[in-house]
Length: 266
Ligand SMILES: Nc1ncnc2c1ncn2[C@@H]1O[C@H](COP(=O)(O)OP(=O)(O)OP(=O)(O)O)[C@@H](O)[C@H]1O
Ligand SMILES: [Mg+2]
Image 1 (cartoon, rainbow, N blue to C red):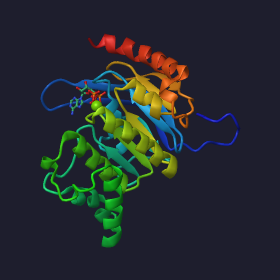
Image 2 (cartoon, rainbow, N blue to C red):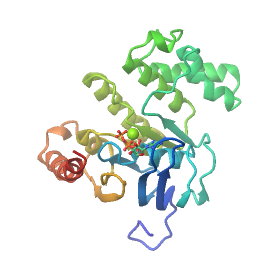
Image 3 (cartoon, rainbow, N blue to C red):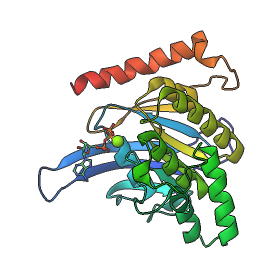
């Protein structure tokens, strides 16, 4: 599938082709979570995933991240089938996955140690990302001593510190208060613009999706399929973007697609 208007072959960063996923728990019943999902993402693209609860958004991220085996269909990262999780893909889990026995600093340093960075470089980078997410002063705190939003920011710092090419973010700002959320959105956009990462960002917030993403993928109710892919095409440099009519119209357009699916699961 070509994504450009020119005739140069376009290199895809993430290519999801016809992927279905069935959970077969040892107890309880089999669940078809995803059905024939295809999604092509270009290098440096920022894509948001929206859809009703249980439609398979997290499942799709786990598959791209290599945390679940691809059983039906294919997922390729830069032309190679996904294997195990790797430092090229950073994932921010929906339910923050910090090590409870490690401090904030040690949590953020963890991936850097595994990469084999020299200790001073680990310290420097960890501190930079701790500062970035606004956790300066809490370096020696343990997760149990942090609020939900702070834990989420620590988890974000840990993922960003590894500087992965691909960021897989599962409702990363879901537990943040409105003000912190807005600050983190601005920071994430700045990081994305500066470091040219490819981002898949799961959210339930249509405004957030329109604000951040270049394309918004709306998924259907379970089993999750791609219902629509909506290009956003707004001027993110406009500081008053959220108050423009174009922004409101885009939010309404996507919201009505999401609502059709939400109604199916009630
Ligand atoms: N480990 C599992 N075993 C069995 N079923 C599962 C498992 N994980 C998820 N499911 C089922 O697969 C479906 C998709 O789950 P998933 O977590 O991907 O949805 P989601 O879109 O991320 O939902 P939410 O918006 O609530 O986070 C759901 O119906 C869920 O019950
Ligand atoms: Mg989820």
